[in-house]
Length: 347
Image (tube, rainbow, N blue to C red; front, side):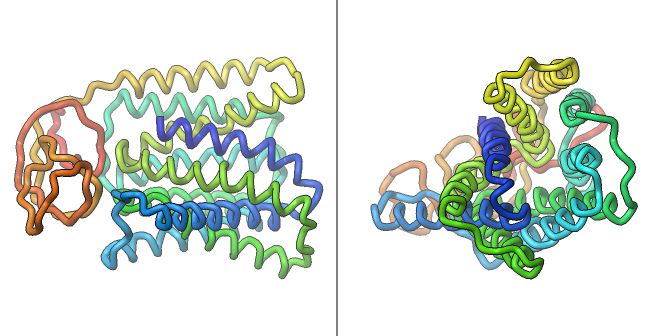
């Protein structure tokens, strides 16, 4: 649900942002959306602190900084820059199809570089979802574009795929903190690029709505995306997030009172098949948990049977650095933060 809600919020932001697209430059609009995300979430964090609400999130630690810094660099700095370069040199139809590479590259990196588990059912589910996304974005036959522009957009997708996999490494930490920092950095980069390119600062009538849309469609969506990474792993989260173009297209049809075409129906059908393959997955086998230490909010379930080096008041969930001793058992599971084990040939 986290991943699908993230996709719904991000998908809904596309037609809403399009309403503002003729009021400022595309790069400036992207920057405002990201800034609305980052600063909006920063206000939420401040309100949480002032209300003295019991916060069970684990903040980023020094050991998280290389992973998080890499995610911000690739996803917040390099990817937006490459995308804007590519969009100026590539026809819209071609760019729309190329952007589907993010989901594919995210899964490939997760499976073959970061060794996340998958089987044939998950592979074909992912392939079906990607096919549906491609059909949905195939509004016209792709036009020929310059090779530099195509390579730039492909590079942006690769950077976001790296970002997704690196963010997975810190997904046990506070999702608000992660999303806010990424939004502020990406927003600052895009606004700077827009101003360097000659864009003017937009009027208040554009500024407020853009940042509001960014807070919901980029900020809250990213918070949910990080939570999904924590529980599902990178490839599955990326697959479910691929539903965002369908949400955006559906909202556009609703607003414009249009009848969906054949490609829309075929794309939806392919996505539905892929989602069904994923949601009906039954991954259950005997597996061994290696010793590990980390910090995140938890309750004392089968995976968290540890001692405390402080006086514990019995409240759950609670957050502290804790150690996992070796454990062998069998139950249904996803490649979440506790299940990063290897699989034998029969599993």
